[in-house]
Image 1: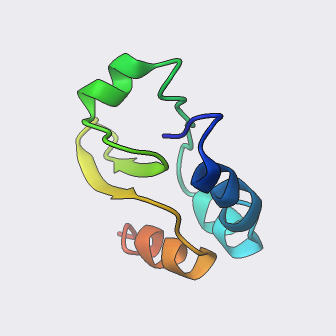
Image 2: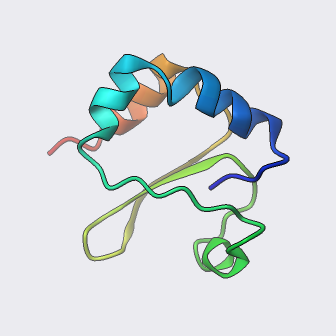
Length: 85
């Protein structure tokens, strides 16, 4: 979850999501970026309190992980690697 006005969201795009290791690991997921201003209902449903927020959901739609704030590539990889299984 992000917003066009969010500085940490832009930093996540520039630094973390553009990292080769992060890109490789994210290829295991269906990645959807939700703009909280354009889709406030989804943000409200998932109780998104701030941006950026990264949510990992099961194929059935239950929330497995929800993490907010800027994360470095190393921090982000630790979070998504915990989803292996």
